[in-house]
Length: 407
Image 1 (cartoon, rainbow, N blue to C red):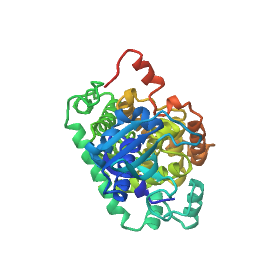
Image 2 (cartoon, helix red, strand yellow):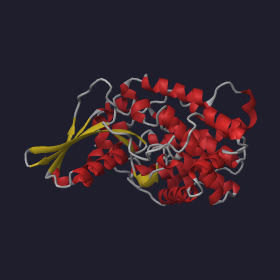
Image 3 (tube, helix red, strand yellow):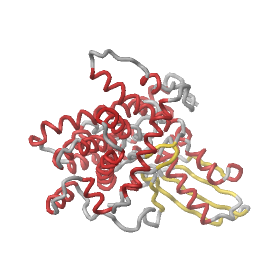
Image 4 (spheres, rainbow, N blue to C red):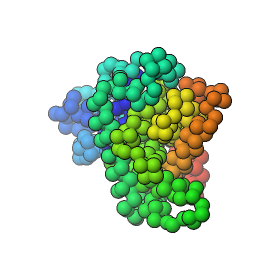
């Protein structure tokens, strides 16, 4: 497996697959053909269907140059095509001088057709399943996944994770400070500040817990929807789950920033396993791949912070993913707003519940994380394409039938 640095990417929202990935691809192509007089970028699949709502066309023009870039939204499909495919052409006058086809595979990563996935050339982790990791840790008397991360990544990983955590906290603070309407035409009001400032009934402690977690999740998800700076965890669309849970744990339990980074390390392993063995792309496997993975990452991070053992960490992650199986990705008007923002809050609370359940029932479980990860992939690839980030089914279709374009 690659470094967990590939799971946590700092960048602008609203979508890792639709903005971060295409931006990265455009920069690669621009480096190859800086002398080009004009560019044409053709979007296919999910990128074509929801590219405007996700800002794909905007980020491509900003990267390549607005005046010299033409965006084509294609309906073409071919056997084996990745749902997030785009092709670049460079021109000198009318003469085409270069081409490149790219797949945006989730989490901001890209695959250039005919080349390997961009990123580290070598694997950092030898193990490729939770079972293999658990076996190795027991053999080496390693007590936690965070220690396992340090062993493989080196002590310098903590500086990286501290930057990740500081960025997550900044996104929370920014989201809690703002009001107004999010861009895109749906007239979605920012709700994080309103949520955070409510005074719930003191006789209902569970309500206070929910309020805090939900406000933190809304804050980050709204920043993402407003093209703010966030951290993929594992994607932009699911970026509010992990920071919300970790912020709540820090505020209520007093964990230091260094301890929170231990949780981030464990969460990174869970995200890495899912990305390696299944998918973190909504266009490929539906929202279960994004929010489901984020929930698993958050549940495992909490289990790490609460000093649970490896079996409990695995169970927390497994429970979190298992109950997101089949979750569709049907963003209204292609915007990462409805139901995406609210979904981050719901998943953050689910992560808390999954961790709590693992505390009591680990010894009775029958399902492994590796098993539920495989089930998620099988479920995802068999979802109808209308429910995999194309905005052609579910809530998106029903909303559009009301005559609302959102643009």
